[in-house]
Image (cartoon, rainbow, N blue to C red):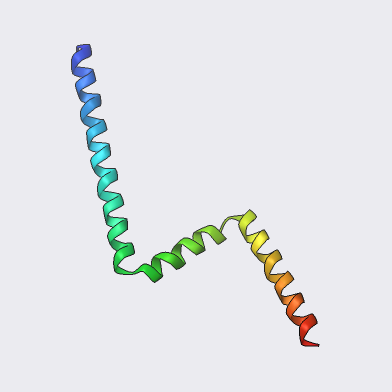
Length: 73
């Protein structure tokens, strides 16, 4: 196999990969346009699944609850 044919194969693979990525992005954008609320909650759930973010969110929620409890009585 010559160097030129190897390069041509690699080029075809890169083009195929780019086409697949474009199709995936288009499919995801179409899904977001059809159901924006579901996409938003899915994104929030993915973010909340990260331990550091979850820890910060829990801390903020506890501070808000304590502030609400102090104001209440």
